[in-house]
Length: 130
Image (cartoon, rainbow, N blue to C red):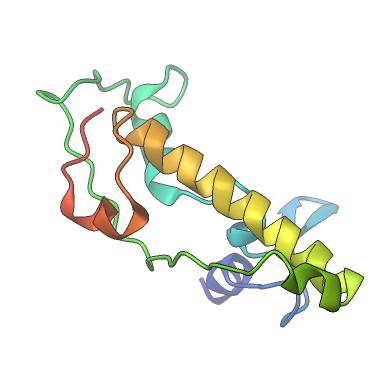
């Protein structure tokens, strides 16, 4: 269990990947899921419980499922466009990657929220209907 928890929290810039044997003679390196744009455990659970091939195949619809996802929250960062010129190129690159990840997360939240586009701070107060 320790290795599973450690693997799911191995943030690349802070921790080395957790190596775990996935089958005899073969191991994998695991890192925190937050480094991918689809870091959404609630969506993964929804897919696992509704798609064919996983054994549950629950029917979709608000009368059948009620999904609650409690996240860590988010904030909206504003930046003066002129400040980009004075920053190191590496910092601009990292900021751009973060913006892509944020956009992917916002798209995922909108998709899972029945195409209602609530600002991120309202996500926790809206009923999720799929």
